[in-house]
Length: 470
Ligand code: ADP
Ligand code: ASP
Ligand code: MG
Image (tube, rainbow, N blue to C red; front, side, top):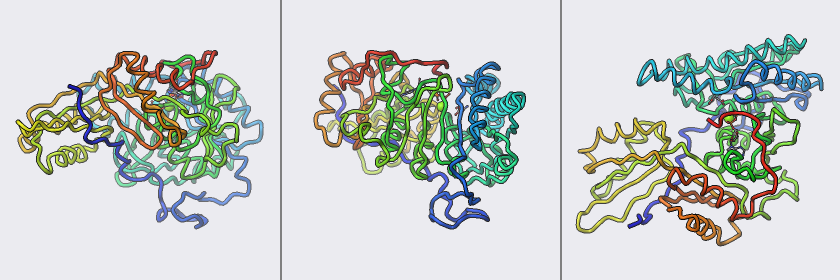
């Protein structure tokens, strides 16, 4: 029998907000906007400052680095003061990670961060060399040198503050100032930290806020944010403008073209973000506040803005939990103590004859092994019978502000899945999102089916310029 849904929960909120440093601002703060990150140095002409971020596939090899350098040189020639945040070349971060696991089955997180931060340091230095060869003065900085101060948590640190003294000085000297993305230094231990996979976007938005840039350009390997991942749905269309709110839902649901914390941050600081390709001069997608979206582009008219997919989660089922007060609480206390974020939760109705129930939940696949170990350590205390682990799952989400006012979205979505013989394993919703878990091999079909059902297909073909999609 299919499970019945007794509890449905959304993703746990981050442990603490990033960069809410009311009480941490240094000398030179304007003191205005308490609770918001205000530029530490008051400038007369913030319009001319821009922050550009280039992702890994845009700088995959020496030729690409020179191509990106030429693009940056053009921005500099237009008279802008340019700060560049750079990712590691191609799949370097994954390769370094693989290497670490070849050396050690459980690498220490501090040493992993020491290793991974070298990827961005390498590309930053190479880009500075390429720019200097073009006659454009450039200097590269590690996250630590750039003043990115973080919490201590290796692999998933939060930015606490940025003290941009060296960046300001470098900009004042007329340099293109290159900052290694996704890294910082712990304010307590002084060790280098990383901010989580894909977090160079967050470095870029944080710097844009601190430097008083009016907008931030995120250069990647596709022409912007599409109605679905163009690698899965070639008929997906570019979204010219999208609200912070919808982009946050898309990012949280697995749309990795923008890091979730980067969007949260851009919204808080009111920074417009332009996501675009580094391989073309085409306009991309502007992520903005609702009031700033052009009339014709407002998404309320469209029922659904986009379909997100995520193949990075796993499911744990705790089988035979005694149906007594406090057992579910204890199960999730253990996950919280292990600092594991839970996404969806389903508790079956207990069978009266046994007085036991099953609790299933999803979590990042990368935390799966730790979660199983942590739960097994308290098996007798919680009193469950066994644990089932399944990483052959995929999540598909339908997102759109229009959902608030158009009934029937859930029915249309589930009909489309049924028509393709796709079983729904778990469900969760927010005001503007419906997510379901399906079997991993059916994920792409589910995304395509939802995309077609909500009338999002175009006649054209979305271009993916580079990258392996890893
Ligand atoms: P970068 O290396 O530039 O940071 P990412 O790989 O992090 O790039 O993000 C870009 C990728 O995001 C694209 O190549 C695409 O496969 C994927 N993606 C997933 N969903 C979407 C979407 N809705 N729109 C655009 N890209 C998407
Ligand atoms: N290089 C890091 C990663 O692959 C950070 C980033 O690219 O944003 O996750
Ligand atoms: Mg990225």
